[in-house]
Amino acid sequence: MPTGGSPETWFDNEHPALRRCWHPVAWVEELEAANGVLGIELLGERWCVARLADGLTAVRDECPHRRSPLSAGCVVDGTLQCAYHGYRFAADGVCVEIPAVDPRLPIPRTARCETAARVAEHLGMIWVALEEPIVPLPEVPEHTDPSFVRCPLPPMEWKASAAQMADNFLDQGHFAFLHVATFADPDDRLVGEYDVVRDGWKYSVSYWHLTKALADSYEPGDDFRSNQRESYFVFTPPHHVYLRINYPAENSILTISFCHQPVNATTTRLFCTDYRNDIADTEEMRADTAKFQIAVALEDRVMLERMWRKGVSLDVTADLHTKADRITLEMRRVLAELVVAAAAE
Ligand SMILES: [Fe+2]
Image (cartoon, rainbow, N blue to C red; front, side):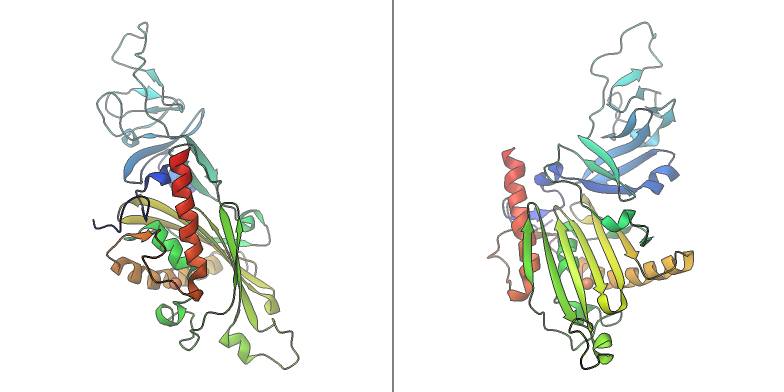
């Protein structure tokens, strides 16, 4: 696969710094549907997530005995049992039973699986950090706010890198070109003023924007923001985008959480959830909301899948950046800092 350079300047789905970060790997419901044992691919490696008696775990998807995939196994008495010879493993990866050997004999110390450093349940998903993470999990306050209805989308696979997708979801300049069929006004091309505010590893942007639909209903004397909407973004590395779209005049808020699983060099799995405070919590309204969000995402996916390089350059002189791109330029700065920090610790 063609890349754009060395790990210092080119950030793709198999960048070594990603081992020091949290990644979503499944909806909680997916793990339940798989009876607590699920094979996943992350950063080009095969792992097995399991819910065992002593907790959630992620082990390398290879039995240390004959390398059979542990994800083909099942949970037996709270342990992960290999389907091939019945070896059983606890959440810390240690083998606790070898059926073919007299139980009075000691289990070899080498009978253990490699485990991921951290596994967590967060925002309705299972998250994994292969090595001790240096960046905290992303936050979505709406997830536990009862005034919001949660509308999760089915996972989507994109032939793009997670960094390109985060770049796309932060981008303000493409709406009039990619999204005319769904929500955008083709004449609304100019990206207005906004500030980028750094806060540790994260940054946020509050962007006030005049929308055509709201402008049409504007009455002279109205509060100047009553015909605008605010898009409030928070980027949490490596790839999380929080977007809260606020229509103050209507007291309505749509928050979108974009979570990305860097599967391998060419593939990313998107876990997207909409949260709305302006709909009834019914199956129909949740489905309608998800349907619209999928239509918008598909417009982006077509473009990203046509890009033949699957990553972003961290060399800010390599690509053309303009004043309108400060929100996505900052993402490159944060990722460049992440690369340095991950290599240093
Ligand atoms: Fe888009």
